[in-house]
Length: 542
Image (cartoon, rainbow, N blue to C red; front, side, top):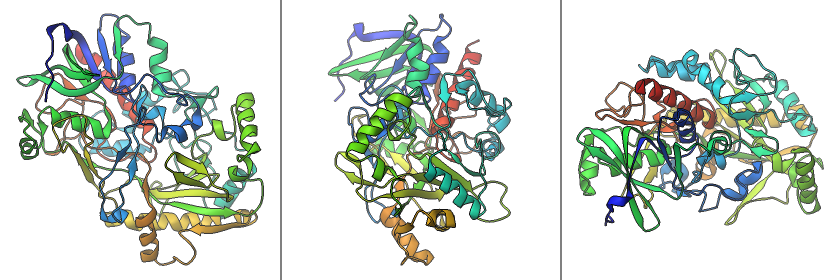
């Protein structure tokens, strides 16, 4: 039942940004840079949480309900009926405050494809200036590709670790070259993972974009503020209804509302506001304000099994170096140098590879974690067995799912259906990725460390045997996109300027607008979307 809204609770701004995550924090920063713009930023979660600034904090925050929506997907055939956990950030910085810290822009082809789909202004050359604007990259690279003075500091982990050196040699032994900068034009090869970590701290958008501007008198940040519906006056969005505790508020805007709530919560908010598939909305008693069949559709994500490998040689993995007194040593190393387990990106080394010869660009991703972990109700813990984890998956999944509300309230999780492996090519490429991971892990340099396969296990050799294991063991890599996709077709939710079709004064700016998946992690492209969205909004405002 809707709570009453008192007149004194109604406040007016020029712009309202819903969601302070990877994109929303960026939009709020750039819009409020002009002191004439009154900006309200709404965030459902808290301002910060313990561990959010520490790089390895993702392990703690993966089960923290106050900082994480802790969604779960619906059971489906590709997961053998399992309900896969789907963590999403719920605090200032959003998922950039709880993720594994990897920094991957994607490939030139990703963005050129968006432009070829009719989205003018989204080619690689169009978005490159925004990628450069957002980052401060201090590890060399080409100035034509890399930014030097942006809000997010990006670093390269040291690859002087003997285990990482062995992996790079092993990859070379099976034809995968070393790539010193996979974010500079050519993604192909194995490399240390570039990371949003600097000076021992996670570089979330809360840290880079919000902390430095909290003094701005024209920016009002509300945390613990759950957006319940968009306010519409005919065909124009005029504000947001939101709640904090037991009170409900209405905030009005004179220019635009920018929804940056992520690939699950952005379509949820649209549907709660009567924007979406008419029959679905009417069934829940919601008045249809704007029929848009694409809202909540086109959900894509990377579905990846984690292959597991024992390492017999002692002292190479964190299973040997970070248990018992070793953990104390890791804490000391972090304090003194910022390195080691506590200061590390989740997968410190990764390879972008081609599934077959003749492809213009890599289509598979392998990522290595230098330890084995076990899942517990309190989160992942370091296993007693020494080893490595290698996830392997196609980068541009063709399987499409959907996310939709099941009740007329923002307090109930929407139903998430990924429809993983429904596209035959995804299943085929997943098997190829696992076979390439096997080739690297059984190359001479890794055999010298006494590597041996734990999972899927050497008894699984045929495609069907491997796929059976993938269905039992695969997980999301936490990269959902596409549910408010940008485009020109009937299923597009926003146009190339991120304006919601059929309405004025309303845009969506986050990973949900991606028409297709980018090649790798999605945090960096989401920040870029925030930068580009703010630029378009400011130009429209004049």
